[in-house]
Amino acid sequence: MPNQGDPTMNFKAIIALIATLVTGLAINIAAAQNVGGAAKSPAFTFADTQYFHRYTINDQHEYTPAGQEDLKTWTDMLTIHYYRKVKDGEALATTANNVLGNYKAHKGIVIKTDSVPRTPTRPAEFLIVVVLGQPTFLEAVFARFKIHNGIGSAAIYSHRIYGKEVGNQMSAWLKQHGPAMEKNLLQWDGMPKAP
Image (tube, one colour):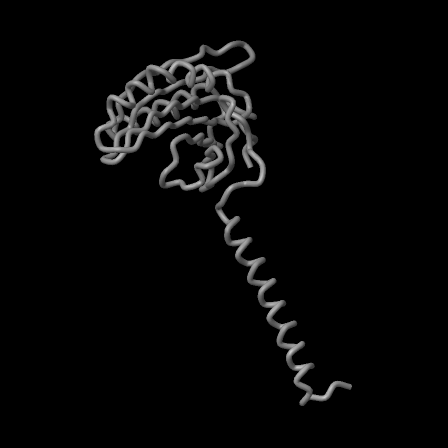
């Protein structure tokens, strides 16, 4: 049996205690860094870019590419919004019109609205393209509304340009990238299932 007064044994016990505490601290730091942080694998690919889950509140899920983890300074975001009470094309049209009204109420500049007519096997889809402004950035928004797995949904691609006088930059970005983003969004079928 070890002697309580043996300095070698006390030193070994202290070292063991410190090692345990350091290991626990390292595990806690790693867990804290992962909370709300980057997912280990992409949730999906959109426009040849991998997107990672960053944030969820209710039925709104936000995704950004690698290197854009900070939701205060992102440049590209894809938001998936589920409308669980929307089950048909008529309700989807009402939802899209309500969102368009909300964009207009926030002084959004409507660039385009469009619809994909319904077919015998698929309800109509709707597209809204707007530019929203804040004092420190402009945001181009491409919103596609469709019935996905039996419920209403919107896939909303947004691109931000930061600064106070960035209207010309946003116009140039829209001219160069807008048609391709619209096409990518309308053709995209990688939307994840609603949780």
